[in-house]
Image (cartoon, rainbow, N blue to C red; front, top):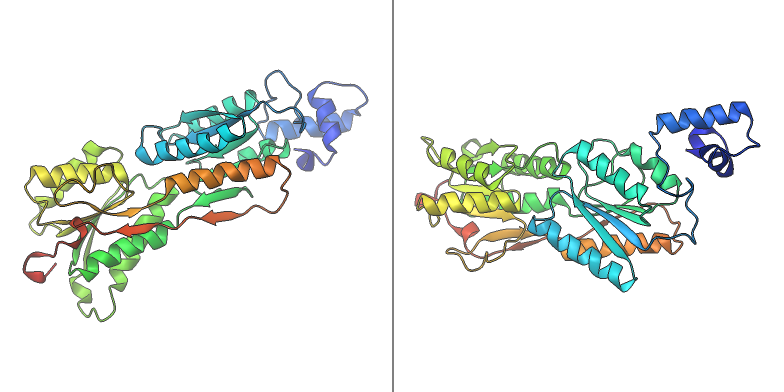
Length: 337
């Protein structure tokens, strides 16, 4: 805010707190910046955070705390925070940008010491005022846009390319990609990798014209994923393999295949590991992210900033892993996909 108004931080503090000794032109510039940045003062405190006025709390925003991936991130952040005598306020925004901003405003009013955020907004510039007040912000799973901030991510493109290549290498050519909401950056990256992988094929693959990608987008629940797979399997030329690019979508696909009796005929690779994935028949091949490591690194980054780290914003990429269990290795009928 100080930079936008072209004044010093102390001047901003005086205006926000309605103190004297600020000229009318300077006061007007700060007030314009307040409106432009949609600034809201922290509850029960001055606008500017002082290093010795910590609340011993972090704000953690997740798409849905009941999602196994998010729950693992939550546990990891809480573990790091507990070791530092800090409590974690966790909230779900269910991929609604309005709810996202409302919850972050609530965190700010409660003067949390730092923020760990999964978001869906296309531009995060609205968080700049929080940064200027000294609140460390670390994005997790989805990268920041329009804001220089730390992030802890998976290489979604490379992970999805690996899944697609795995199915192609096992002989499949009619492959369906089941996607989460395309408003989500990770969903778009996974879909792009699948499309690129299908177009490129594999080394020595000369059957370019035989590759038939099928896309089903914006699957927001297990039920919708299950229904989508039933529709795909009813096609005149159904897919011989499925890449389900989110854990709850994988569960829906798995239910449909088992109900249809096709679990041993249609290959399946999921994104994110699943509880009991190794106990179903066939066991589920997945691209496994490491949410515990991601949550740990994100929380550690917040505390490093609170401890005085002023280095430029950085992005940490946590590797994913293809876990081969059986479902992704089923070959198409007659060896042809």
